[in-house]
Length: 356
Image (cartoon, rainbow, N blue to C red):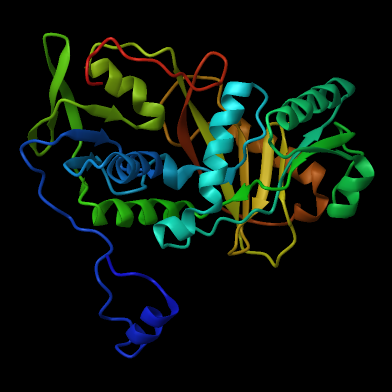
């Protein structure tokens, strides 16, 4: 793997940047692997990378039905935080946040992680009590968190409307939280995993998981059968679909989660602003786009569009919070498919299918 540095940048400028190495290979799938990772998004590629880096495995394949990072990785709103309530979830996300803080250096690739802070607004006395509870729980777990008053919010965001339909009484704030560039994350993990010998196979949809005596023995794909004794399903909202191929019913629901981006603006929003009460959150990308997220659609499904009333309600809420955005034009809208557990926390357990 060619190392990125100021010197490699200068050296390649002499050839008009036409002689850079390919970032990763496009190999034909082998007949057998030690581990097959289904899903070529950020999580799938990270799974393969850490299996190779931390556990010394080299005979690994990542199978992606489309192109790298074309699923939820390309459809999320890029927010990174660890200020969750439950201790178990908090420790998981705090570990993740610490990885984020050195990820660009570890992967030798700029993932554009910006620790601009994440603000969660409180609109009622009960929400403020919940915020205080969560901040206290975070501090006890060693996670940075603080409570902001309405005047402190106004000082950070002078143009916010605190006296909207749901008045803003305060907020929690995690200064180490922020955003990253989703495409760069996928490319960085793909490049690093490839350098460790991982085969990344695109346009290779898994159509069946083959078993024998209660254990996985391989996967049927659009490019033929691949033998393996270990399978990782890392397909976000489609995890239940893949698990069903192995006869496993996961306690998850899949919902569309919508997002939008606006036309580019000059820097105006210095942090991430989230509100559970009005089901809206907003940040500004490095390109200047306003990145807006909504609440989930209540129906179950896999359609990557979502329903109109969710978009309408979200934009109404954003405009009421930030009247200065009322004439900003939206460029595009989409939905990703999220898998939701009953308590919205991760599930850690062995599956009844050996090797899955």
